[in-house]
Amino acid sequence: MRRLLVFAALALTLLAVVFIASVALEIQRQSTRDETHPADVIVILGAAEYRGRPSPVLRARLDHALVLFRKRLAPLLLTTGGAGGDPVFTEGEVGRAYLVRQGVPSESIIVEPEGASTAQSLAAVAEIMDRMNLHSCIVVSDGYHIFRVKRMLQSRGMVVYGSPRPAAPRYDVRAWWLYIRQAVGYGLWRLNINI
Image 1 (cartoon, one colour):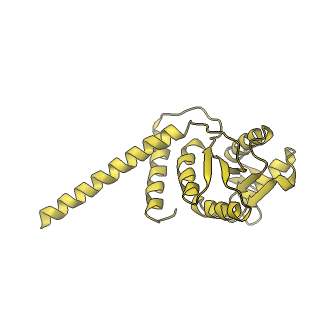
Image 2 (cartoon, rainbow, N blue to C red; image 1 turned 180 degrees about the horizontal axis):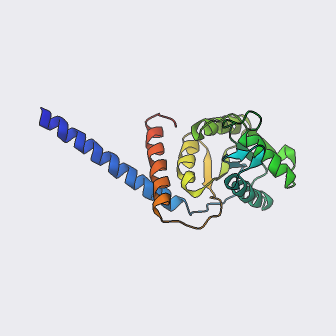
Image 3 (cartoon, rainbow, N blue to C red; image 1 turned 180 degrees about the vertical axis):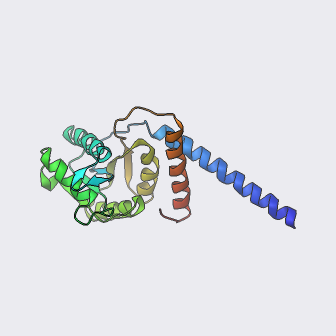
């Protein structure tokens, strides 16, 4: 009996490693694929903000979404992200303010200011899209993030196109660590454990 339990534990561990490795490879492939396509809305995933100013990562995401918006690929922009510990500003509101300063009409911007995690932000995005009768979106984030975000929104019935912010492709240990982390996050989400 003990031998059987050890064998089962080893088999499950091997399956988990194979699953994570195969998903990490899919994430790596998705990370450089720009699927830009006309849609109902451009969803910009939040990132850090510093006292009302977007971090370099958030600014790069916003700038990329702005390029897509100016190409008229969608009539609306949706910024996401909660306070992240800031008592005054949220990532979503900082994103909106930045886009308005770049000349985007405020009525073209929707803000999701509550999400404390990717899962929370995307649940709110899906609700907003459903309520506004929006069925398709272009998701803008860092490349390693797109795979999981697409799957989470697709599971809610949305048509989702990924468009990673411009960045030089990386194949170093740090990049693969990000892919593996996202693969674990995706696997946990599939098990209904949201992080």
